[in-house]
Image (cartoon, rainbow, N blue to C red; front, top):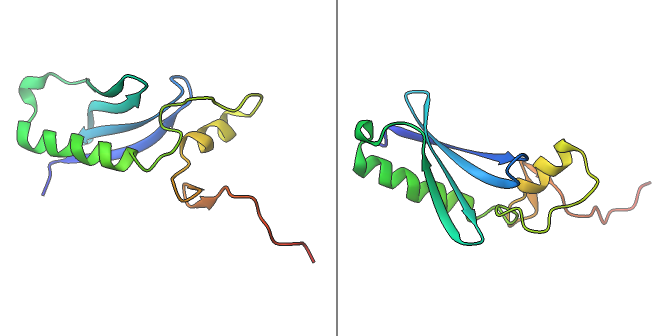
Length: 110
C-alpha cells in the first residue's frame, strides 16, 4: 500500500488539470502535462520522499490525469465563469466532470 495519496484538481490560474501527491496530509509534489510533456514539481525536500512509493504515486497520477481531456488547458473556453472553466478542466474522456455529464442533453422537455 502506498504512503502517498493523489488528488486531481482543475487549476484555473495555471490553465491545467493537476494531480497533487500528498503524504500524511502534506503536499509533496504536483504532476501535470503541458505541450512539452509530463512534469513533476517537487514541493517538499526530495530527501524525505520514499523513492519507490513516490515513483509509483507519480505513475498513478499520470494514469489518472490521462483521462482528463482538457488537462493541458489547450484552447480554453472564453467568457465563462471560474466554475465553468474548472469543470471544463475536469472533463474526462467519457464526457463527465466530477460525476456530472457535460454532454448535450438530447432529451426533450415534457
